[in-house]
Image (cartoon, rainbow, N blue to C red; front, top):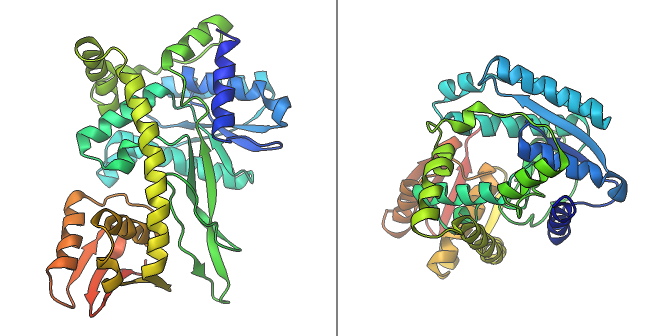
Length: 369
């Protein structure tokens, strides 16, 4: 197993072109088995790829002294591997309560915000995280339950571009791949066009199972921290992992995790093709004017319905940076605006975005912060 497992991970790295020579990598390490395995494998590739690795650890303040012990464990691990470590403490339960979102969502947002800040400070543009095939299956099931479309059912992308909070001068990064947050250019007071910095998230363990990880840890004797909150079914992902997936394995398909993971990969490929096609159509029917996007209604309505929605998604991603908080009801309101409402009607969307129906034009606008 110790020989086969690293080969599996290296195969995934090559398949998705995750690493290049002299890469600077920020590795998210919680102290759990997945992230410890990820760090161990990447460290073993350090010489082959001439990697510069920095550990990033976030204390979410969920588990008191247990969380503090996790941080100490990761600091000791950094010393063992002779690697630099960056860490922070963030009151995620407080953020969840303040913003009215789930602890899981608050933790995810806080974690990736920390990764971006750490990567910026160290001038790093690649961030490695330890999601496995099991995480992929759990994510797909979560999104099925929430009624996701093709993009959502594609699950976790092996490689994903993530937009940073800072901007820099230069040319457009162009099409950025699967599940990408597409940036909108801005101009500074001197008229210089600025583009948000993009970070690449890589997931080298996405094609190996959690059991593969556990077996590898036993064989190699790696030490790790156990997160007691992973056993609490008050969290949706835990409930899916501990209750729903075992039920599906027992009564429906013993290979359900592999099936869901394969389905996600197939949908990612199809979604990438359709997204590229829709982005080309978006460029042909629209133009960007400062903080507005203008879409030619006549050209837009000639597009197939499935592509029309993707064109709107591309426009909203350009303007908003992502599609978070946009619900099915929002999309129905947008369709109603386009097909039935009179000229000068407006639909207001989250994050200060609005869509107005003009004569021959749809106008997407973003209010000033």
